[in-house]
Length: 228
Image (cartoon, rainbow, N blue to C red; front, side, top):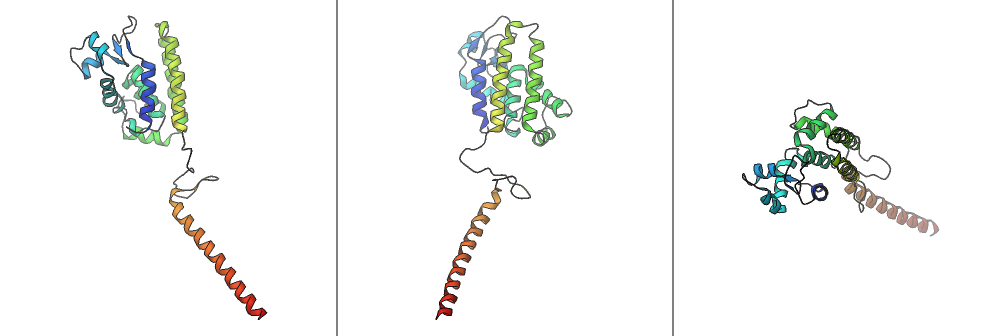
């Protein structure tokens, strides 16, 4: 997985916590966010509550990578949007998270992400797209909490933390390097240098220094010649 994944999953594990078996949660016995239904589908066909309680974190990590991150094409989504769709899928189902993304993009809603969806994501303004998906998620959970009020505060708190992390991932820039923008027209904006221009830049500097030295030497030569 790409570089945002570890940070995204650290937040997922923090939000999901350890083992729980809340009578009001239709997921039943759950650990690291993996329900007994997922455990039976992807790990042990006859998993019990005790199995879920004892489930190693490595099992949860494998399930998340194969059955949540891969179906949404995590590696192909823009930074920040990747975590946004992943966490929505973990919390409310992959099909729903993908459908919300497709509706937000104005694409055909199928619940299965495709190449056209990925290209549309890359052409869209990422921060705006992230905010729209989180806005929809907040509306959905607010409505859902009318029948499950005990979960409202936790759900909305998770959304606040999640949106903050998503926007942070989207806006993150290297702190120890120039901003590099590779464009067909060259550099864009003040202080921005296209990656392809660096070798040429040093060549031009070398030529300029050499020319200055040559002019200086010739000037001194003709000055001395004139004086002599």
